[in-house]
Length: 109
Image (cartoon, rainbow, N blue to C red; front, top):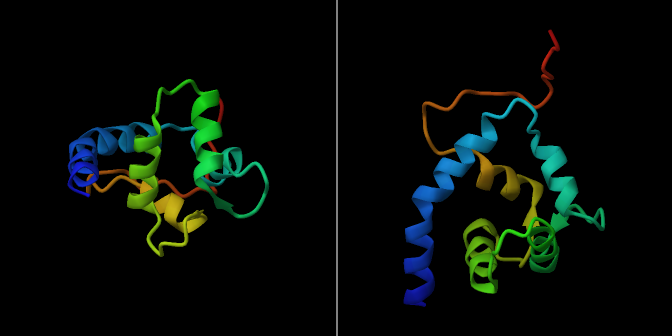
């Protein structure tokens, strides 16, 4: 219990930095990110789907890391991540983040 909580707290600053980087990319869309992980088109992400995705990225994420992420993101405790939980997890907490509606696409110059 305490080990997992400490691990989650230690990661929060790094997670927020990564959220900002991802959120501010011109080519990032929540829907696309979700669909890449939800390979079964089930409209949710399971531990196993996330594990497969992270292995493909060669992220080095361990079972404990994925467990900590799932515990943090799965708000309704159904052992899967819905699209709304996914968006909430990846949206920066910082109030200075720019708002970027997902329907706006960049124009090429």
